[in-house]
Amino acid sequence: MPARKVYPRMTDSSDDTLGGRLSAARDASGLSLADVANRIGVKRESLLAWEADRAEPRPSSLIDLAGILGVSPMWLMTGVGSGPIQETSDLPLEALKLDLQRLTEAHLECGRLIEKIARQIETYEERHDRRRDAGDLDGPVMGRA
Image 1 (cartoon, helix red, strand yellow):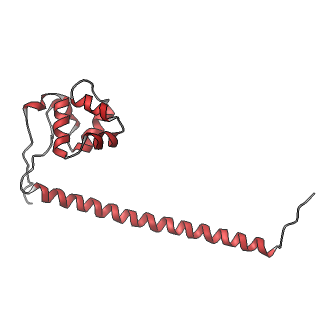
Image 2 (cartoon, helix red, strand yellow; image 1 turned 90 degrees about the vertical axis):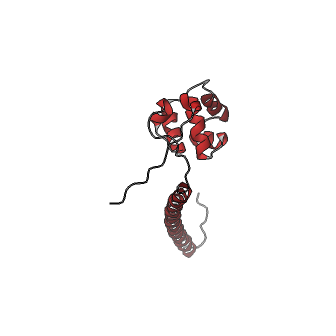
Image 3 (cartoon, helix red, strand yellow; image 1 turned 30 degrees about the vertical axis):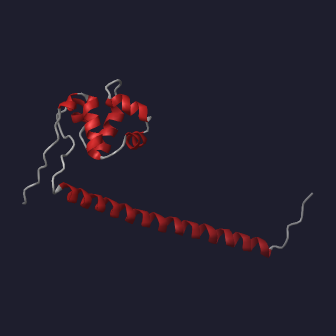
């Protein structure tokens, strides 16, 4: 079995608080404040306050942040665990391959959904046409008293 590649983790003196680790992980991910805030459904100002250690996220937001930024929730809280990966010469290629795989899977799923919706529309239109045609055979409907 081939050995698993190990990538060094980033460490920095600014990583000594939740806000510092959050900021470092966001920087390493290449995401803007607005991108991350939109993804977890908070205002940009709230995220900025978290990064400045003026406020703390709820536990559910912390878990969402960890997932978006590719770090463990434990690392965000304590600095122990899986933090952001420091880029090496091999990492961008591996990350690109992973992104391509995810995008390909999403593309295939989109194709399946498009086909499913197209069949549903076709079925609806056929039923609608049959009802309309059946109504036309009865002739015009006269008002009733």
